[in-house]
Length: 251
Ligand SMILES: Nc1ncnc2c1ncn2[C@@H]1O[C@H](COP(=O)(O)OP(=O)(O)OP(=O)(O)O)[C@@H](O)[C@H]1O
Image (tube, rainbow, N blue to C red; front, side, top):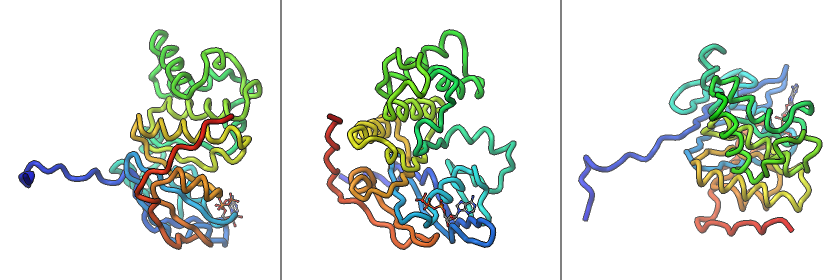
């Protein structure tokens, strides 16, 4: 039986749509008219040799570095045309997770405080629901409540990266920009963090821009892969239609 035309639901539009993005560092064009889309719940891998412009693309998508040209449509809004005041309320919905798990958390603050900070800054903290939300986030990323009382250097790299993910999730994001999120981790810890990211995506419908130089990881983890060279995207290919098996858990 066919569905009447007036009852069909249109497919959701892209969560992120990047159009002809240009980023220059002085005379050097690091990103040269790059375009791509990411749908809700989708992972786009961005791969390419060192210096090809992956991180510059990520920073420009996040508007942490304003691009020199092009458009970044996120959740229906064009970000490059917004001034900082109008951008501020949109920033929580797109969160970065960087390579160095220790570098993205203040060494002075306990993990619990680091996760609470976005809730406080965004005016979503109260004495009852705040600590409960932090406890829930710790649990969501597979950390014990006791990890919340430690400082970053008292955690392993993998635990610290999980804490960084929990802090990103505290902002209720729709998009995570993952810039080499497991490259600095001991190989035995990588699969655990990647499996966590896959589970969170499934549960929360997050879109991921996933920067990585390890093609084996990219093949397992991404729906589509964009290959970058010299600031340009050479091609975008789909991963195999059959979902790849989950990576084995860490030993
Ligand atoms: N802040 C900056 N000032 C000047 N040049 C920069 C700056 N950031 C990046 N570049 C240059 O822009 C180009 C792209 O760098 P980018 O870090 O985006 O590449 P990448 O693909 O992420 O590299 P890697 O994999 O090594 O992190 C490189 O030539 C780099 O040297």
